[in-house]
Image (tube, rainbow, N blue to C red; front, top):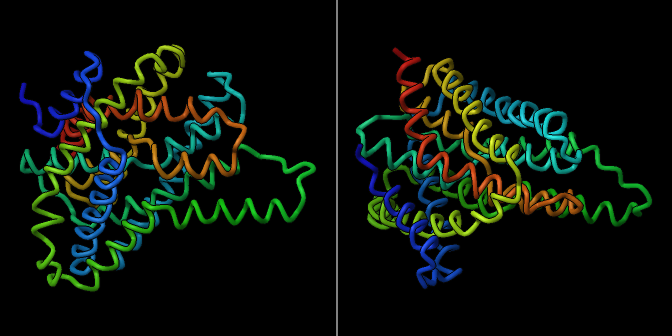
Length: 317
């Protein structure tokens, strides 16, 4: 069995953390890698968007937004009624699993390209669209009461929430990259050697750090209990299979449907946690991040993405 070179770096990072190797990954470098990946993904999508913009794409975008609204609705009753989690925790975790992981998407792109599987290059538009709906559903599901909080304080909190939802770094950089790529088109060739040619190398460094982070959360995973472990594996499989069916139903290529499956299977660990800290400060955010980053991310990288490829290809015939 061959392992994609990017995933090999994830395994290397996990091994380094488990044997307690003294590898110091500067926080500024980690943040820079995330920024790079977001901009590069946005630029690629913008260039493709300038070439493939159509009414059909608008309808596909509507389906994707509806998909983003639907996923947390599936996750919430499982967490609340079966898992017996407090309502705010169930709503917060459901929002994480309704949103997307840019890192998981980047890995999926690398795997598809290494296997020579073509896909629609405008899929980054769907990444952007899936960032926001789950947060809104999570808020609605929590039914958070403002109680005796003053109206002015609530307005301030609402402004903070809106800022996190619409102006977080993922939205700004990916939407900005999309717009720049869309307007500039082939003129982006001047920056292509940096953002496109170095993409896989930057992804490898990012996964090295993510492997160390995931392995360092082994103890926390043991504390979340068997239910959360099962949920962190089962929910991405459900989301992935639904995403594959949706992608093929929208008329995407097999590669495009695989990427929609990956988006449906991934869980946010950047944008949604920041928003949930604002709107649901009383929620157990450690539980959410342990599930999305400590369980679902490594599952998708090591098992999920190959599984979604096989299943989507099987459905497509």
